[in-house]
Length: 182
Ligand SMILES: CC(C)(COP(=O)(O)OP(=O)(O)OC[C@H]1O[C@@H](n2cnc3c(N)ncnc32)[C@H](O)[C@@H]1OP(=O)(O)O)[C@@H](O)C(=O)NCCC(=O)NCCS
Image 1 (cartoon, rainbow, N blue to C red):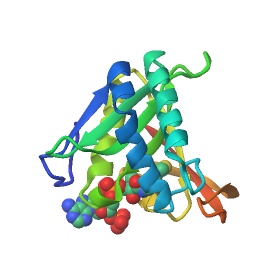
Image 2 (cartoon, rainbow, N blue to C red):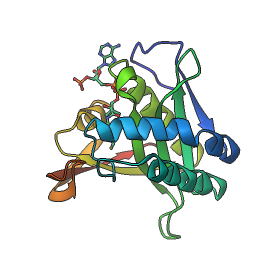
Image 3 (cartoon, helix red, strand yellow):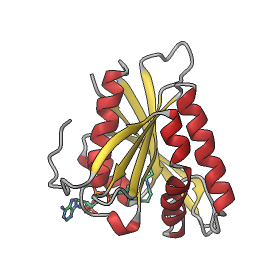
Image 4 (cartoon, rainbow, N blue to C red):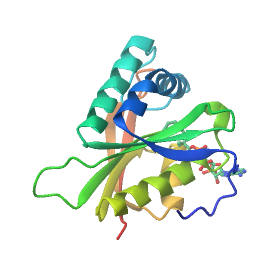
């Protein structure tokens, strides 16, 4: 795994199988709720109920079981789940080589240590292992995440204004990126 950022070695990144994903629903919900509370535009409005957050992650675990999604997590030295990212590999039959990166989330208490960069590198490694060659993602325009993807060599495609809402209801643009990972 390429890892140019001196992130804490005590933090581990690993891929979860479906049973592990189901067992981590509460911890994943904690991270999602923290991110949405912090103003991240990641499909949900604020307030986000624990029930809705858990339901989302149960659906992700089911997607892992169907082999439609690859789910990665970052755990700190105490075993606390502090970050996550997904690769959506279940694609239409005319796009077998493509995957989407989704739900890159790092808890506010664990940010600015290079965890997202490590998660992204692990996602790209997982994509190569799955024989995916073209990855696509979108993110809120002007967000911390936009800089992350640019730093990691993703190609900016363009921006769609007023694509989504921020958790507080304000309109936000969305920037699309792709990366070849062969
Ligand atoms: C976007 C997000 C995932 C980034 O997570 P992160 O773990 O803080 O990311 P990194 O640590 O890799 O990089 C963040 C910043 O810390 C800096 N950094 C990295 N390692 C560092 C270190 N050891 N010491 C100091 N700074 C460091 C990076 O250079 C980067 O700087 P920038 O703000 O100037 O771009 C996180 O902010 C988040 O979860 N946001 C809310 C959810 C979201 O928007 N997700 C994206 C959906 S597409």
